[in-house]
Amino acid sequence: MAGSLDKLNRVRLSGALATALVLALVLGPLAVVAGRAEFGARLGAADWAALRFTLLQASLSALISVGLAIPVARALSRRDFPGRGALVLLMGAPFILPVLVAVLGLLAVFGRAGLLNSALLWAGFEPVSIYGLHGVVVAHVFFNLPLATRLILQGWQAIPGERLRLAAALGFSPRDMARHLERPM
Image (cartoon, rainbow, N blue to C red; front, side, top):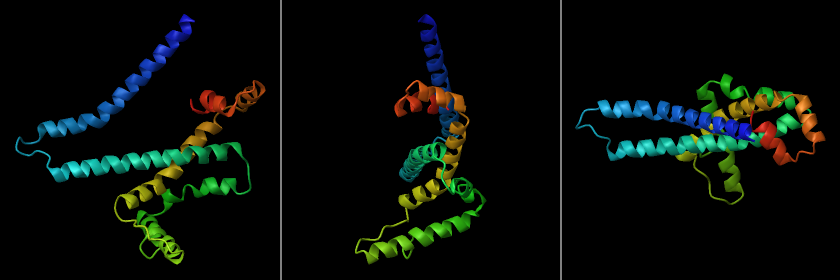
């Protein structure tokens, strides 16, 4: 019993250290730049607005990308269907497309005269705007979702088949499978 508590404490400590390291790597450079700035050169309202916008769009992009990547990767790792390999291969397209081509493609679908707004107008709904926060998040999700899906999928495909069979033989529920096999990967 004491050994398992020791292990749990080591895991928590390593998690806390990793979190502290990431925070130091993110906030450290910002603190150094702010500290070396001239005394009269403080961040103005526009600077704070840009920082807030950046943090908001980055957080939304990351949450949406990972939130969608987990079920997609889970479906791809658990099911074999015709075209699965082609779909995984197609997820590499955002990385080989020039950024300008990808942006023009997003505008062709989501722009003012894009396919989505044309369909919405035809159906009698208000058009949506891709310009501003929505557009930045859509563009980031376009690039980040395939990457997150492929990384999670690779982790789950690395789980040995014997562990999956053993978990099935032990009667693991889907929640237990996620907790003990998938989440650690």
